[in-house]
Every structure is written in C-alpha cells, then in structure tokens.
Amino acid sequence: MNKASLPELVPGVAMAVTTYLYMYTWVYTSEVNGKRIREKYLQAILRQEIAYFDDVGAGEVATRIQSDTRKSYWTIQRWMVG
Image 1 (tube, rainbow, N blue to C red):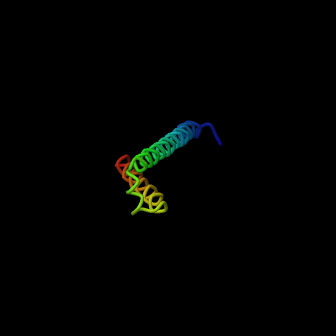
Image 2: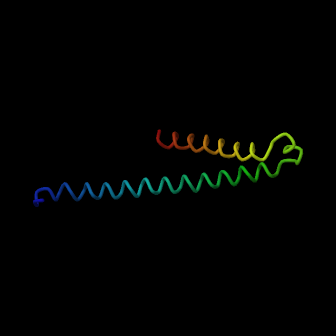
Image 3: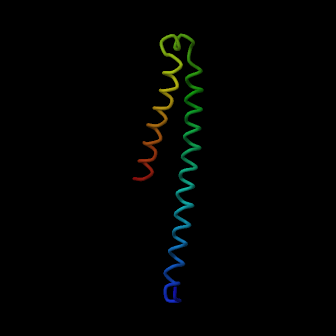
C-alpha cells in the first residue's frame, strides 16, 4: 500500500464503521420496541374477561401475539426504509 491510496482508505474505513454502528443501533432499537409491543399486547390480552379464553386456546394466544407483532415489525421496518 502506498501513500497515495491512504486518502481513499481512511474515509472508506470510517464509512464502514459508521454504517455498522448505524445498523447496530437500528437493530437494537427495533428489538427493544418489539419486546415492548409483545409485552403490551400480552397485558392487553390478560385484561380480557375470562370468558374470552373459553373460545381461544393458549396456543392460539401465543401464535396470535407472535404473528401480530411480526406484522407490526415489518410495517415499522417498511415505514423506516421508505
């Protein structure tokens, strides 16, 4: 490597590092928000009257939480990407 390529190498490395930090921040915040959404959703389901669970099984509740939070995650991701 010669000194002429150094001015191009430094910004390239800096861009790679900042891109990694940017992506890490978005992934971390999306995971935290996803966890928060799942917790709030579960709290809302548990506040239902007990008769609600006569028609809906425990497996269906868990599946519904997972599928609905996945849908909201993809919606938020598409909104952020543009």
